[in-house]
Each structure stands twice: as C-alpha cells, then as structure tokens.
Length: 248
Image (cartoon, rainbow, N blue to C red; front, top):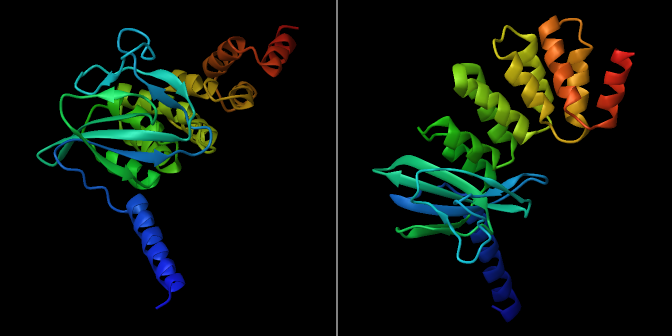
C-alpha cells in the first residue's frame, strides 16, 4: 500500500468519524453535559444576565443558578446546548451563544458537535417548564423547533399556549405567518397573543402580517383594532402610510 493510499484511507475514516459525531445519537450522562450546534442563518443567540453586564471582567453564566434570563448576543453562527440529567431524566436545559462564558460547580462534559435537528428533538423530550424549554427550542433556529412549538400551542392551554405563540413569532421561521394567521382564523381564544406575535416578526414581515389582519373581512372588529394598535407601534413606513390612510 502506497503512502498516498494510506493517507486517503486515514482521511476517509476521519471524515466519516467527524460526520458520525455531528449527526449521531445524543446520549449524555447524569450531571451537566454540553454540545455545540450550527445555526441557520439569522438565528438569534443569547447570553445571560447575572445582575450586571456579563461582559464585565470575570463574569460567567452560572449553570447552578435556578434563575434564567437572557440578553441578546447577536449571531455568531453557533450555539452551545447545556443539559442536566438526574437518573437519566432531563431536568434542565440552557442554550447560549457558543462564545458566551459559563461556569458550574460540577464538571460539564463536552460532547463536541451535534446535529442541530437531533439536538432540538432531544431537548423537546424534556419534562420541564415551558419558560425554560421554549427559549431553548427557539435558540436552535430550525424547522424542528418550529414544529414542536406549533404542536405544543395546539395541544396546550392557558399561558403555556400563549407563550408558544409568542416564541413562534420570535423564532420567525418562514412558516410563522401561516401558523399564526391560521390560528387566528380558527376558533381560538388567544387573539391578543397571536396579534402580538405577528407584530414581532422581523423587518417587513410583521407589518405585512398586521396589514393582512387589518384588511381581512373574516376578522372581527376587536381583532382588527388590535392589529391597528400594533401597527401604530411600528416605525415602518408602510405601517405609518396605512394608518394615515385610515385617519384620512
């Protein structure tokens, strides 16, 4: 066997191993584990708020604190998922920008790079409160997270469902308008939350969605009033034009 042949074999084995690592099953042990995920373009990432600016000297997100808060980090193309298991049961999850510094009294086992879809499916199994789970799903930025949020919005009630609508708007996948407008058209008792979620869509999308509601003959007067209110909160030129037309 030539050196060239040997180099090719080693390279092929390494390539297969790295791909297996990135897309293989996620099987963390008890305690804290973490893995990196690659993010779809435009995905929001966060760091934490620990009483003062986390960028201050020596500041780190404390995984051992029960409180959970976020501050925008921007987009750096990668995030890091932190999970804590007890007796094989997923008890906690955090997802921060990959560059966000963290600390814990326990060792954090690094599982390397993992497939983003597989990661979202894994944390979706967590039996934890929605205030912790929903942001972790949104931080994956993918269609798996969007589908999980929609499923939870459909089957849940009260605040859990209302928050699902909100986070669907924050995730802002291409399907978000269709999902939220379909819910608004159906027999739904969350019109205010749905309108607000539509208003939070980025760029032209929020304005376009609200204008669609405002002009819809199928929506009742109160729903259209809510759409008009949130249009009034927007500084988008088209929103201001629409309001000026109505007032004139």
